[in-house]
Amino acid sequence: MVICVHLPRFELVVAAADRSKLVEQALTGKALALAPLPGADAAGHGRVGEVSGAAEAHGVVSGMALGEALARCPELVLVPPDPVKAAETWEQMLRALESIGAAVEPARPGLAYFETGGLRGIHGTDAATIAAARHACRSASRAPHPPPAPRIGGGPTRFCALAAALAARSRRPLLIEGPPTSEALRWLAGRPVGLLGFREETAALLEPLERLGVRTLGELRKLGRAALSDRFGAQGAFAHRLACGEDSPLRARRLEERLEESMEVGDASSGAALERVLGVLVDRLLARSERRGRTLRAVTLSARLLAGGGWRDRVVFRQALCDPQRIRLALSLRLLLLPAPAAVLGLSVEVFGPPSSEQGWLIDEERVRRAARAARLREAVAQMRAVAGQDAALRAVCVDPDSRIPERRVMLAPIPE
Image 1 (cartoon, rainbow, N blue to C red):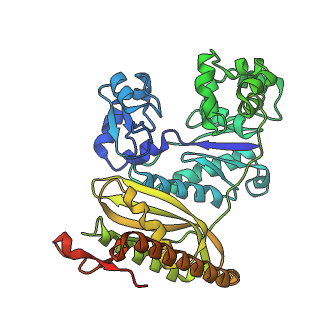
Image 2 (cartoon, rainbow, N blue to C red):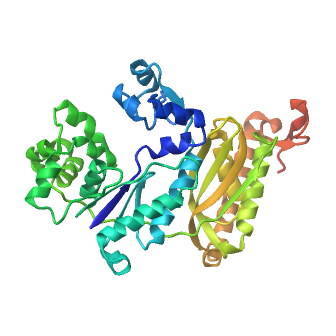
């Protein structure tokens, strides 16, 4: 049996946990919504995140444009998002579930799955396993205002378990026995088609299905797999499979050792000083003995903002790196995305690469590439000088970067031949 652990409005609750005024407003029925992340929408129109029940009663939903949300609910209170704290809290939840022996597949913050087949030898029954998972989620949160009690559902597949968790009460799990029988399919047919929005593969189908008047999974199943595949392609066929109680097997996450470094930046909240703080974090991370000579494949750059809230960005390198200069060069470009001055800057390793000794065979090839690149640059400079004169190709040299006069910080000098 697959178990689904769902914490409703997880990111909204975590963002408002340390703000007692927002908690009081939520308890009195005020409409809350996560404010848009700066620069998250390429079109320039911010969209709200998770919303409270009072906001949903006014017609505000997650992903709605900010202007439309305020038009529907003028008294809507926007909560600054805190993705750093949400990621830390969610990681604690996942590790707590893994501590009971579960192989967890995290779908998104506040939603995770695991199977009970291998846990019966540890906990005895499915009910005891669910009780252990509930206790682990409660013990994982140490905040003054912990996340809400998880809603737990079980079923033969991941999608059936999700439907059961969304229909379950906060203190009583809902289990759908499998494999899918006529009774289970009849119960699943009455569920709203909005369940497809919890899956990345079928989230884009919600809007066209609503225009077609499809409201429940039963109506979707009656359309037929061939008709859905002809209209929506592979997404339509997969949606029909979900409506019929079918799903792909779980993909549990790999347990990776995480290394983290953080540093208070003080007055160096932006600019070149912040890049120097980033260089210190990179050097500290590479000097950790736990790294054991391994390269870095993916890292997460995070920041606590002076105005409140947080910011985080996941960076995947094109090849595994252990060169601090190349890592700083790749990460310094992401510092330009900071929405506000930072108070604390953090760097953590998400995925390790192979040990650096295994990449020794690339040294000669790398030297050849660097020599070829230097030769092309020299040829380009020579061509530019031949066309526009000797002063056409210059380089910037830092003379006094801390000077208050901008003209004294950098000067132009000829490129040596």
